[in-house]
Length: 259
Length: 381
Image (cartoon, each protein chain N blue to C red):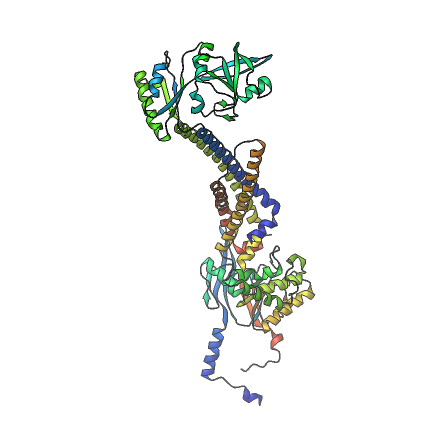
């Protein structure tokens, strides 16, 4: 019986699948390189990166410090521009003006930083509202969407507090809410558990996993293999190059693949 | 957003504002004093009568108008009356008290022309002049100094050693240009000429028959005098209150300009203070700028945020400055009894100027903030 279910796809089905696959490309990098000029010498941070990430993936980028993880994250997050290659984010070529890049960061990317990067003078709700202020939406909707995002991370009883009154785990949840509030194409998490103890770190990871289950695309940058192992796809970089790009076996155990 | 960050650094914002506060309040006060003085001078001149024409004879030769010339002038159209006047400083003595003051000698017309009235007693009459009576009208300051009271009609005093009877006391005049109107005595012209051994009269007050006739009368007088002095225009001066008003206005205008200039410099210094503190603020908030940029703030948004903040500081400083200026002006008015007049234009102008200062001096720090690279800004500790 199982044998009969496993059949080759016909042409029509292959084309359809290819189309779906292509449309679901969120990140498409070809030949990305980044070279820093330091006086007369040059430092190559990234070379020839080809990377495609589809919708709803949960990707961990892992590598030792100095491998180029942060540079890659900055380029993915449109905080930095590559010196070579082409980067298409959700169908948009990122080789564009400073203003356009700000718009892309605003609407397509949600950042989650290791040190939370919340504004200490603003309350929790104001911090979450921050990205929405740079969009053109009515203030009532801003409040509603911010509340919705805060509810998602379970902090609705703390909205008037200042970040400094919260624990590290709570602050990171605020940061996640802020990243979620614009409904971005990707959530970009840079060592999100780096500043937390292992228990709260696990909670934060669980939130990310839940968000991924709801269909969010997550890119996680870490140097910790234990954390990376929670992702469904693990990309290892070293000396500015991708040295491996594999699905996480843990999630695909027992899944038979037709050959 | 700007308000919260100004509030978060209350002390610093206040110190930054101080420059602007001092600048604006000094503009308000200084311009107020200038304007008040100008108005006071204008009032006094107008009180003297706008029909008044003054002739001063300044020639070195033995000059003066003869009685027949004066009588001839009086008949001319446009001229209502003429009061010749002599001035000299004299020493008074009453009992054991001595006092020196200004003696002014004239004819009965003087009272009407110079709008001077007595509060008690009477003014000089024609008979006093014709008979060279030794009578005097005293100002209240003189009366108070010599007798300690203003009830002095009928008293006698010595003027340069000659005995005079007081026949009247002047109404309080207040001080005006050219000394206090209360610190003088008025005597009949002929009496003074004998007392001072001086028959040369160099000042004439002339009243035109109406305000519109002032220019006619003035023109006629000039013609008459230039004929008399054979075109030597340096030996006489004819002026009316309009030219006096103009001169006074010019003087106070240039004074106001100078004061505003000084105040403007202090505003610019205040502006540099704002720039300074905004630059510190940009460095301090580098991380905040990085976060804002990472979540999608554009360059312009950051620029505007910082500009609003510096304009807000300077505007607030301007408003506080206006209040401080008002209070100071009020204090000066009541305590120092100086005339102060604050106009709306100055208030609006100085607040506007302070906002402009904030924007101009906030421009550089704001543009510096907007150009920060988000990566460097996020990494900033």
